[in-house]
Figure 1 (cartoon, rainbow, N blue to C red):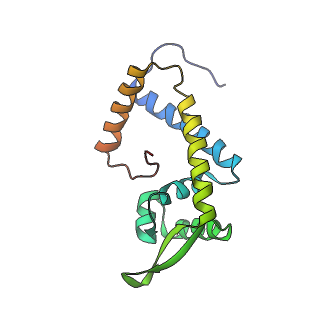
Figure 2 (cartoon, helix red, strand yellow):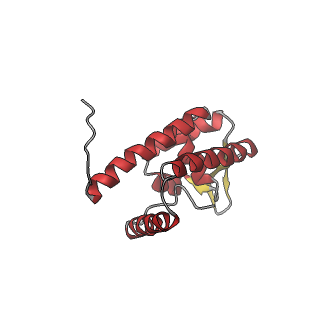
Length: 150
């Protein structure tokens, strides 16, 4: 029952369908590295800096209990670590371990190659137009820095 619709599609359908496509690519990339999709997102977020648990929950859009479980599992795998927050003795910051940083770099590069492959047939001007439009969507909706430009 998976029928393909021929012809042009609207912006909403295009965005929704491309979200499914990018998520599938992201999940496949994570699986190759022995990660869940959420662990891959966590590693990519932490590439830029460490975060307090509250900040991290907001960036990833996770409830406290879900975030705690994700950080616990990723910490047990030796990829992230909790350190005391220098500004608040009751709080911790979550950052990448050396092993986590190496894996995050490899995962990020592989995922970028795979996502870039989705538009490999685009001319340079088409890529720039798509980047400009998607950049506006991201900025207008204040999307957190889950996957940063490197």
